[in-house]
Image (cartoon, rainbow, N blue to C red):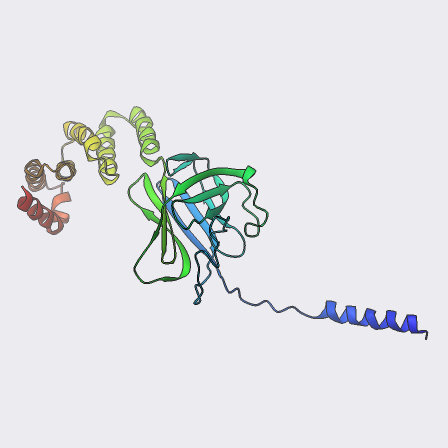
Length: 291
């Protein structure tokens, strides 16, 4: 066998051995994580990898200032909105985006929603593909450091919430606004127009209850008044009591609560107040202290 043929055979055997060897799938040092929440009608999903501090200096060192950061580890962090939203007051269409940050030593940080979600880190980041850039305040907590980077979604009310990023002492909040109330009331209006007269009182009641939950007590009051005019019950008066209390009218709330109790006691079929009387009594006592 010639020397040339010998080396060809030798390297072919090495190649076969290399191809046949199994690779070890090591666990990631920065494991994959998901934060998900439904804000009104809007599904929000955040997919990211969660690095640890691990004794390292983070800001200005591991994460440089004034450079695009993947806001996590490994693949780019992605955020998906199932409906159109507003981020920091700016419109952002429904869709899935890569999420990046530009940290700064002083002043506001830049949050970026990029239209190319599937990319490894920021290495092929193209600013021309940005769907939205907003400025956001980076706050640094004096509380215990967050060892692993974590996203969460903080809800304020039916239309508003925050995307929260916490790592080391950083606490960053991005304001998110959705369109829950307007969409719900548009559907309610359609249902009201189609409903027979005997069903309208219940629809007005549901609208008032929803608006109270959504933090819009002033808007809710005319709806509950209309429900009372059509179908008075212990429940309608109790919802009115809660609406008035939310407006700070505790005297009016106590009068409406008294009427709810009277209607319950005068009708065998109306047990709404009785079924939850212990809870309602505590609320009434609180209103009396504030009257």
